[in-house]
Amino acid sequence: MIQQAKCDFCSDLAPAWYYPATDFVAFEIGPVVSKSEGSWAACDCCHDLIERGDRAGLAERSASMFVVANPESAEVIDSLRGELKRIHDLFFSNCYGTAQPLTSEVLR
Ligand SMILES: [Zn+2]
Image 1 (tube, rainbow, N blue to C red):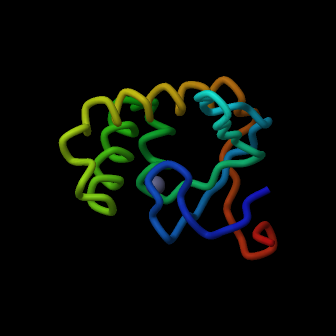
Image 2: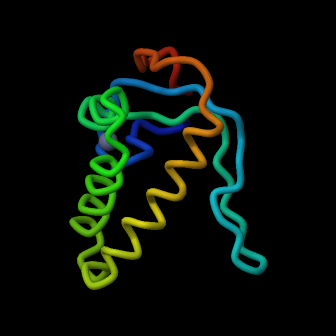
């Protein structure tokens, strides 16, 4: 379930779509487990990249937007991009169905 109006790929604050997905573990480092739960929201730009099958472009956009929000991470953008790509690949393995318009009724 989508709990906030934020693109799950690039953190854009105006997602317009969502992709239904089953839960999966995004990463597990020792006791730290990050789990993805349910659907992922996508803004128009990420939706375009996904529909075009441009996973490299999607990872690039996600990493760039992350660095804009967290400038101190600029020096690790290469590993960041790789890690985001890995998580996106996991997402696509767990995604079922097609993009749906994200309306206020979908948000809780
Ligand atoms: Zn986005």
